[in-house]
Amino acid sequence: MKENSKKRVYKIAECAVFIALSIALMPLEIPGPAFGGDIDLVMIPLFIIAFRHGLGYGILSGGIFGFIKCIIGGGIGWGLPSILLDYVLAYAAVGVAGVFKGKYWAVELSTFVGCIARFCIHFISGVTIYMITVPTDVAGMTFANPVLYSIVYNAFYMLPNTVIAVIVMSLMRIPLKKLNKKFN
Image (cartoon, rainbow, N blue to C red; front, side, top):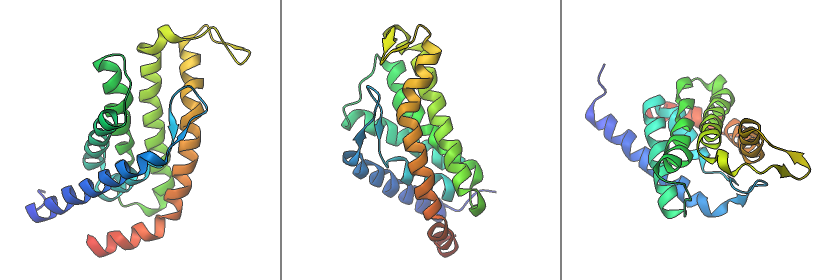
């Protein structure tokens, strides 16, 4: 069933506001323990979009945010494929959390799923694009394998981001429920 145009315009406007909130949270990042990847709160508004409006709005909003973050956040990439993977597709993957749209018991699960989806995109980027940068020795650990290195490298900043996101979204379960009742 098609949603009416007034409701669609409202959803698009709300997504724009939450994308802007993600952008506003960018300066609050903490450099990650790895040589890249930051610990921040930018995914929280994207999870709210996905949880409130579903998969389509979540993926599109995440992709738009990723593109903007690359441009204004000084994104570094090795050509278009790395920019697409590390920014656009990685943040679009956060929108996978929209699979659990409106299921209040699943706020934490949807957040975890979105974080795992983003991790997978970063992992693919690490294995396919950044494989030539794999050092042979890091802090006494030998990484001759780009798969192992990509897992460890991306886990160093995605694990703290996942824990923070799950905790924050868990605390937002009741406010989200009230917001959804009021505006849906």
